[in-house]
Length: 82
Image (cartoon, rainbow, N blue to C red):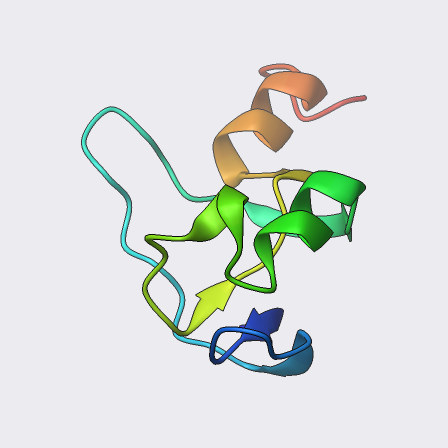
């Protein structure tokens, strides 16, 4: 997947390929269609208070929009009509 990735403390995020994470128990993966880098995400990037214990590399960002096959099917209805 393409993502804004921080590769080390004090480094700026770079747009690059990053391995997609596996789905965690009780969660499911979605296809992200939009994401923003808000101030919180920018504060986590340099490795200071918000992310002092952060492991590198990591994907920056906590807000986004997307969907999955399941959410798309629910939106369309059983007959496939929108």
